[in-house]
Amino acid sequence: MFDNLSNKLQDIFKKLSGKGRLSEADVDAALREVRLALLEADVNFRVVKEFVARVRERAIGADVMKSLSPAQMVIKIVHEELITTLGQPRQLDLSGNPPHVVMLAGLQGSGKTTMAAKLALRLRQSGQRPLLVAADTHRPAAITQLEVLGRQLDITVHSEGDKVPPPRICANAVDRARKGGYTVVLLDTAGRLHIDEEMMQELEEVVRLTKPGEVLLVVDAMTGQDAVRVAEEFHRRVPLTGLILTKVDGDARGGAALSIRSVTGVPILFLGTGEKTDAVEAFQPDRLASRILGMGDMLTLIERAEAAFDQQQAQKMEQKLRTATFDLEDFLEQMQQLKKMGPLQQILEMVPGFSSIKDQVPEDTTEKQMKRSEAIIRSMTPAERRDPRIIDGSRKRRIARGSGVSVIEINQLLNQFRQMQRMMKQASTGRGASSLMGRFGL
Image (cartoon, rainbow, N blue to C red):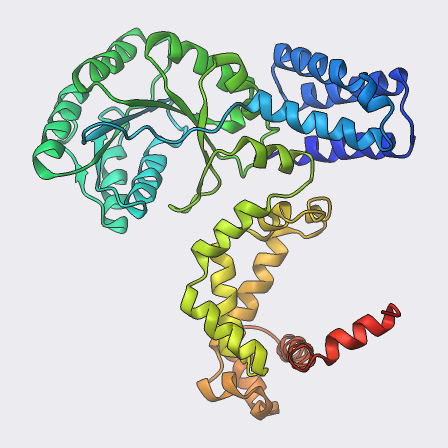
């Protein structure tokens, strides 16, 4: 989401780093570029003005000007002020006696229904017993969509069709949750414009009848400044307690994320990072600020890896790597686990120092290569996967027909795999490390 902004800020700081000692004029020149970069990223102009003023006040201080590395000090200040702008992290408030009522509101098409299912899955994984409520009686197929998602995730959905008024559906669902032992009730309300008086009154009636502990506005990050205006208007009518930004994995310029909390005063709780039901992250301002500045986000990367990789599988794989018995079945398994972590470009964005090269790795090309490799391996027999050395010319032609690729592509995959095996064998004996160190005279 912040690709353009991140690249521009990194270029600005590279120029500063090349200057050594900084003058007040150097700082002002850099901040002019920062201001333009933020405005181009669709950040609210008041937020930009306040942000730049805070950075300048700190950056022209004696501690920065007399520092041995003033450029690094400026970057540190920008990082800290970005965190201040993004606000403090906050989790869902599930204090008190259950059932806890969480209402999702927003414009039509913002992704409320999918987000309701994502939150339900997340809550169940944390030990809660969620109940999804299909209260969007205005959008065709909205009820069916939530019921389908509920079946896929094995989560109960409370539905009363499209003839019962939504406030009554929500009140009945809370009563059912209380009697049925559900701990969290997630209300998926209809998308509405903030200028639609009748629809806003309906939302106020839902709040009156269910008394939700959390009222979350789901906002499409792709809408930019419009998202900020919508949040302000909704907050004026219903007591918003939190915000959820969806579609942050798209081509949005990022201005909504940097503006919305500062303008509305309402904290961001979650980010929707993709279409899959597990593609949601708790909002962590410090991590997002690091990503914006190209510093990576190793904590989120580790959390994704822990969620994607089974502990026993990881231990088994470690043993195979140590003994250099890694085969094509293991290679296929690792590819499948890696895909669970999300698109490769998202992963590269989280690795410090790699955010600037992620654009050099075309996402569609990488995905195609992985699918092609997977098709090739799946077209092999179990014996061929365990011992690729038995794959002769006739076997390659059979695999090529089965996977829809050429024999040349099969040879490329096998060559890459053999190189990987050799590297693992060297690493397991210590020769790989010693030869590498020898190259550098260590």
